[in-house]
Amino acid sequence: MTMTLWIFFGVLAAYVIVAASLARLIKNKDDFYVMGEQGSTLLIVGTLAATFLSAVTLMGIAGISYSEGPLVIGALGSFGAWIGTLIAVVYVGRKLKAMGCRTMMDFFDYRFNNKWVSVVALILMVVGLLGYGIIQLIGAGIVLAEIIDVPFPVIIVAFTLALMVFCSLSGMYGVVYTDTMMFFTMLAISFIIAPMLIGDAGFEAMKGLSETLPGFWTLGGADDRPLGWSISQFLVWILFFACTPALVSRVFPAKNDFVILKVAVIGVFFAPAMQLLVFLAAGAMQVLQPGIEPTDRAMIVGFMEHTNPTLAGIGLAGLMASIMSTASTLFVLTGFALARDLYEKLFDREVSERKGVMLGRISQALVAIVVCAVAISRPAGIYWISIYAGAIFAVAWLPTIVAALQWRRMSANAALACMLVGSISFIVVGELKRHDLITLPANVDNLMVAIVLGTIALIGVGLASRPSAYELETFDDLKQKRMSDSTIRDFLARDNGAAKLIREYRQVWLVMVLFVAIALALWGFLFSKLGL
Image 1 (cartoon, rainbow, N blue to C red):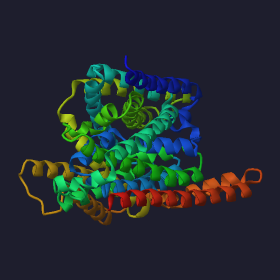
Image 2: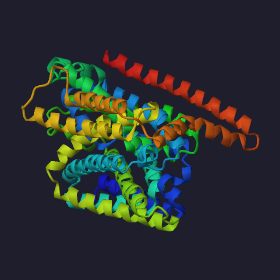
Image 3: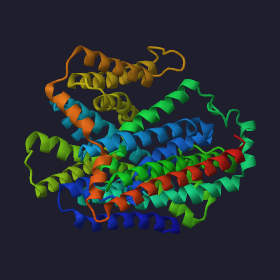
Image 4: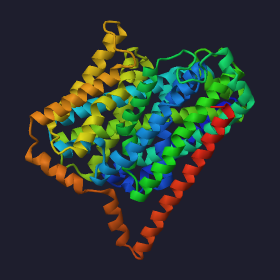
């Protein structure tokens, strides 16, 4: 076995060993679902950034950056993702954590106490998470099978067994700790391998690509995509990232509000910064090796043919990490939904701590088995599910969650109207457009249509009906709950708590100033070198 494969499988084994060793920390359901709310700044930054940087970044979007130019998605898409992630952490995640949520579904149950709202929200979440996760596993498995000469089913089974260890044995502990390990592997890609590829290509040669590929350094790219497509990418990344369970739930294990605020600065800096460097490195591959097909392989070719075997192994391990960090998060949330949000709430609300953990582990194993079987079969239909997955959260969940947090007239009927109209109209309009049965106006796509229709339905039903006494009471209660209040009370209850509180407050400001300066220096350097 080559050095590259030794590193690849060695890193995979390290993840499994660490995750298995963490099973001893699971004493109750809180440990399993939110790691006892003991997440430090490093751990939450690691899991947030690792979840953000998925195989879609290193393969799909890197392929677009290679063929069309880094700005097509990098300028508006990544900026939209940055805004969306900030909203997910600072606004949605903090508010739901203040409510004591252990899963995203806890919010819908608490806010509306309506079976149909919970059922619809649960279905949308399971379909969205599994669709997005499975297609990542399939696409990356196919590419890795070609590169490292290991059969596709073997790679999928290896990933599945590892995921079962992460999710089934150690729950959120396993996901968060292994995500943080994976984060450092991904940092090697973004801050070691990517700059090497950019350096080998040279900034002048990269700038010169616009002469052979007109539009390479424009928002439309070499394929001259319409402005509406770029705006749609900007919107979908904001709207999807702002409410996706994969990012919002990263806040729940955090130790306190200071950890969340530091994560909002550090984690939200690293996520787009890592993406930007990967996209520029993919563009550099157009100089180093034009003509790569399919273009999704651009970064992998860069690892294998333009670095030494050690870095190639680290690069492939980083790709594997991007798959597994996102997949483990998606699958653990699906398992949580089945065990806690479906079984416990519908069939056994008085389940014991020990039985609750056991049910959580069984649900994770079942999800892993189903995912493995579907991924190995490689169904064509799952591709379309994956396309709709992220956008469904944007058009169905986000207006519902924001209105539930901010609008006193928000009711279960309004929530149902928004989720159903938003998701169904997105799918129907998209399919009609894809089959050329309808034509949308210039610079308008089905995402924009669906979120407008869903929001109109929400407002219309909300104004036409009255919220129940329970919904009014929970809204008023919700407005009183702030994450900062519980953190202040906790600190003031400690010895010398006021001094510790002031010190933490100052640290947050110091971190913010430091990372703003780093971001300005990094972006300014790259933009000046590329003449943008």
